[in-house]
Image (spheres, rainbow, N blue to C red):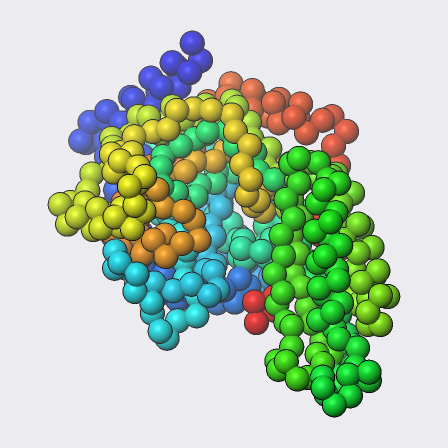
Length: 473
């Protein structure tokens, strides 16, 4: 019965008469359409890496300042992080805005593979859309609050370096979410979904081996290969996989291994990720990696040190909020594409082969479910500081994998912007529900306390280290 009441309330908002457009949340989002397109495209062009997103962060701050938001910049010791707020009294509802790109992948907005030679990064996870969509939703919420006289504050969190930098973890650790009542999060995807989705906890670190260089043929006995240290560590960790729990994920890449085969490398580095659905299991696994590193150094006559780069807690989904978001998503009219956009999408689909999902999937809402995903996100730490609700919108062609050239293309195309507007509409409807439904607020907060546990004490997987502002340099 409660879900029906929420649905009816949303339907009434959608059906607001023409003379009440200022109070119609969907109309408020539609009014931001040009801004969404412009900002998404600008950030897509910037394609800045984590903690280096000076232009992207600055663009969002400029847009918010023009709309009367109060800005706190450089929060949590991160120059590109910010908190923007508007309003007084009532519940405080925050929205997350990401804007970092991924290194080593470039693509134009064309539907066929087309590298952009002068770029070193691309928005293969759609964070340009993420930032633009949350910006438009925050401004639309601000306008709705003002038009209706509803007491409440809307807050936009500019959150850098989600891709391996854990920007939100440092912001959570600094207490920036502690006085918020709720947070709304969204992410680009190849489908529309408000499933209750738990992510994996993870921790990453760089293990740096140092040896002695020498001529590999002329004086091999004088050398001690740092690369041998890396390879010995990798061998031991790979054997360790047999003796971990089923949910464990361990992966690595050698980021430095020497420059020439005839020079014994005196420096080598390997970058590791460890993931599990239970943060305590990640904490238990990590010392085993450190032991493997020490053993590898001992056996190869090298020295080793390491640095924890990032760490995320699992997300804490709340069904009361996720079911509400699912209802809001289903109230929206399906995304409408032009003939040109559909032709563009069809060309993208051809790159997936015979198993490509039907294009119609982008206009549908995925069945509600409770899921555990195998990725990780720093939204997990936010969700353990404040009740958080998430939604995914079809910004990419069905079948598109995140971190792919197809995702970069869609994130720079009008196809992606339409999905972004769809997400902004779902977010504003969810915000309106939270501002106006005290019963839902109480239910969600009770579920949050029960899910965390009465005696819960927040602990990050990063310890007390400072933000790694140079991790992408």
